[in-house]
Length: 357
Ligand SMILES: Nc1ncnc2c1ncn2[C@@H]1O[C@H](COP(=O)(O)OP(=O)(O)OP(=O)(O)O)[C@@H](O)[C@H]1O
Image (cartoon, rainbow, N blue to C red):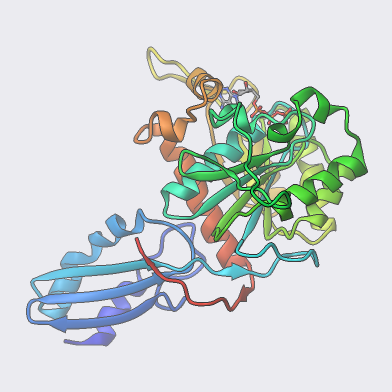
């Protein structure tokens, strides 16, 4: 068996959203042959369980090169802890924090944050979500746990609310939605810092933080108080929303938080009868912003009544139709976010924690 040829073939495999192939990135940990089976072990430092299926495309070539009859893929994930971009104190057990923002209200930021968190969980991660949208904490409703209350046995810390396999906390669980909206800057950001640190998140690969919309002082304060690893900006294709998205990108860049990319929501409307796609709010805006500001366009989501309806019912798209085309769009975004975060970040050595996928 010629290991060099096998390595060369593995190195040709590179999903389009990866910055490196698995060999040069150091993900391949071993190639061994025993009798008729070629075993290839990989450890992935970010989540993407779908890789297992994609790798099977290499089976025929690897069998030919090794003379084995079949290939056994041993894939495990050990999500790397990446250095956070600011000097905020780390949250124990939480490996990476992803902030979701929008320059403008109502563009679908919370919808994207919830589906992104669920998609990261589906890809194999241990995931939490912190609803930092003090102006409209909608995540309890979106996750179908509007009446839940985080429990506290010691009066000092609280257990997050479990929902659809992820852990959630929200200012909305603790005070009525109306009360939260009257809070102003310092009070709101102080309360959030407290919620972030007093929640017993346990071990999380990713904590998604849904920021309040806008690019003012409160957003900057929160982004700086939270040990953020990277941020993404949600926008719609209208010019006015795009202009605000640019402000969002600039805000993060000013405080040195890497922008993982832009998600264009309500990009087009797809007719449920004939499948015709129509760009209701203009075309190409997200792509323009992404290329002008050198940040990736992470994905485009249609304006689809089922996304809104499923959210209102507390069963987000990823849960309501896990195998559907819309869920797949969110999974693609999550895979890009996870890989983008890893390839653009600086790794902090963590205790080795390897799980079989
Ligand atoms: N792609 C979509 N297709 C259809 N409806 C959507 C889509 N994205 C979001 N919505 C709906 O649009 C409304 C606003 O979405 P959401 O609350 O996520 O926006 P937001 O940007 O977080 O708003 P705010 O920051 O002002 O709270 C919700 O009713 C949601 O269900």
